[in-house]
Length: 276
Image (cartoon, rainbow, N blue to C red; front, side):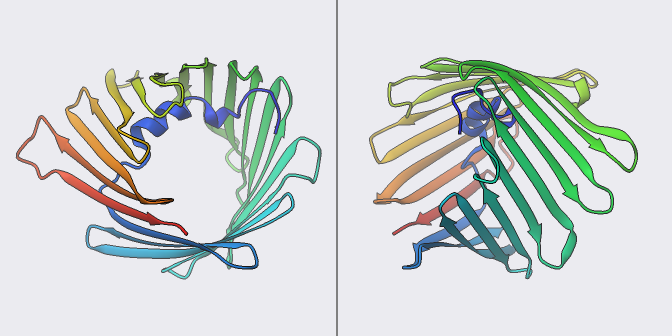
C-alpha cells in the first residue's frame, strides 16, 4: 500500500517460510474453484494421524473490500472482513466466529512512506491490545511490538527486530520472548528470478542456554519442479519435492527424519492442490 517499510510481522518472514512453509507430515487435498459471480471457493480435507478434518472457504472481492467465510467440520463459521478504503493509507481487518462472541478481533494497519503501525484488539470481556510499528525504508527498517492485557494490567509480550533487504539477499535479527531469545536469519537468492535460495537461521534461548542452528534452501529443478531441504544441529533432516502436475495444480511430497535416532519412523506428508 506504500513505498515504505514492511510490517513488523514481515521481519524474518522470508527465512521462516523457506524453513517451514509446505513442510508437513499430514495428508492434504485442496480443491479451488471460481463461480460466475466472482466467488472463490476452496475446499480442504486433511488427515492427521487417525483424525480427519475438512473445511469449505469462500472469498468475495468487491472493489477494495474482501469477505472471507470458512465453515469447518466442527460447525465453526469464521468470517474475516478486509477494507482498504475506510481511511487513506490504512487497511482494516475484522474477524470473528459466529455464535462465539469472545472470538472477535479488530485490526487496523497504517502505512506511511517511512513507517508502519498496526493496532489489534480482541473484542471480548478481557481484551488484549497488540501494537507493532516499524520505521525505515523498504531496504532497511527496525521495529517493535507489544501485547498488553487490560484485565491483569501486564504485558503479554514485547519483541524488537531489524530487517535488511538487498536485491539478492535478506537478513534479520529478532529479540523475542520478552527478551529471553534472539533469532538471526539470512537468505541469499541464487538466481535473478529468486526461485532458488539458501537460508541459515540461529536461535538462542537465554534461560536454558539452548542454541538451535538450521540451514536449508530451495532449488528450482525446472519451471515445474521445486526441491527444498533443511537440517538443524539436533539432527532433524527435512526435504520436500513440489511439482506442478498440470497448470496451477501442485503435488507436494515431504518428509522428515531424525538422523540421531534412525530407529524412529520417518514422517511423510502428501499435499495436492487443484486449481482451475
